[in-house]
Image (cartoon, rainbow, N blue to C red; front, side, top):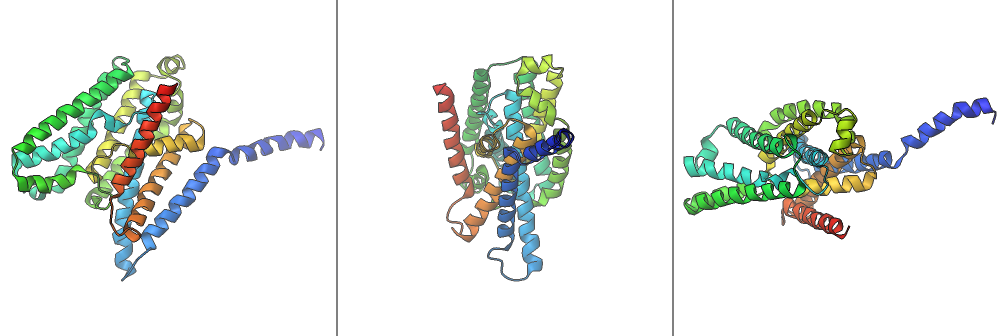
Length: 335
């Protein structure tokens, strides 16, 4: 080939090679699997009028996608902010705080409050309290002074124990019938996603996503560490504050919709990093979201159509996520 043609062709060849790199192939495969999961969820076992089946399943599908997106993105962003791939936002006591909110509502206002209280007010109250708690705690841990990983874990454990102790005290004084009704809300349930607040939740998610898209390149720099990020011109305190606020909003939305999840985010984030083979967030974030959709939508389809609700999807996901957490801890210890 003449040198002139070779010089013109080399950028095209390089572009073609980059277009079919490992991260892109992984995203294409995951997108296809997610699409198959969605189609199966919407069509398998459908009986009766499609005008009823499609809207009914569609609302549930939108809820599962929203939860998967929120959990996956919040976990990846939290791991970037803390510069540690073992941690998740739930380790900071979000699940215990959610249980405390539900228990306090029943303890002070009675079991009828779960039904009589305005659903929108209840949803907003949960979001505001969890966002306020997380923003204050994360700011103290990461923004005003660089704290150690051990202190982070310790604070999360202490707050979790404190919240659970308060909950245990309230439950001992509570009417047994009220406790039986309340207990159902203590565990995540992907089969009963709260679809009444989907449009509000999606509006909040759109605002947060706009900020995330603008910070993707900055998050890549943050993976280099605090000192390197500051040397490269990143306003560290401002960036970390914004990231943690967005993480708080995402976790609050997902928790208010389905309940607390502990290890699901860790599961999809770890798989995303392993599959794409790079730490660039423009690949890791969509891969984690697609994996979350596959797990939730595909898992819920199998649960409903194959196992006939004989088990709970959250139990399976949390079990697998716990195994991944133990594996990551043992691998870091071995190093």
